[in-house]
Length: 158
Ligand SMILES: Cc1cc2nc3c(=O)[nH]c(=O)nc-3n(C[C@H](O)[C@H](O)[C@H](O)COP(=O)(O)O)c2cc1C
Image (cartoon, rainbow, N blue to C red):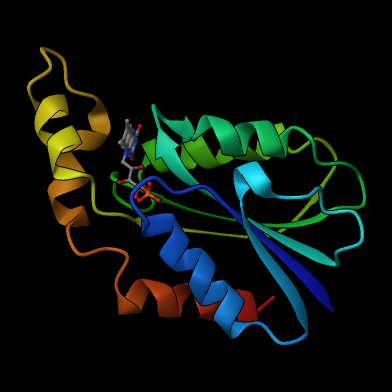
């Protein structure tokens, strides 16, 4: 089993998930930031991780997902300021799934990720703050050990 882990991360939350996946996997494995990542041809499973921006996967990950093809097996993971299971997150996951062409989704895991405090303060000041901001204070300290365990359990149950 040969695995590829591709991730995008500005403030390391998503990288923490990517590193945990890498550590947990047996067999041949490679890990790359998205802007250095190869396409998945030749890999049995590709784990693609995004951080959420403006209700969607970040632009670099979106671009990568659009290059996937039929025959690619995909596990999507991500972090966000919004509450897990919220409509905001569900819509973003649906959006990500819509980008992947005919690649086959084997699983999805997302959790909250602490929002950069400077960004958080700036966004809170907006006349009409985005819907996800109300959950962002609860994202402090995430991803934590429980999030990482949830991710690993999800992957092991595939
Ligand atoms: C510019 C910017 C836009 C963001 N937009 C959203 C958003 O639309 N929805 C959301 O839930 N979180 C949003 N976030 C929060 C991040 O997705 C979250 O903190 C994530 O864990 C960051 O991951 P990283 O540390 O891997 O970069 C935004 C953060 C930034 C900096």
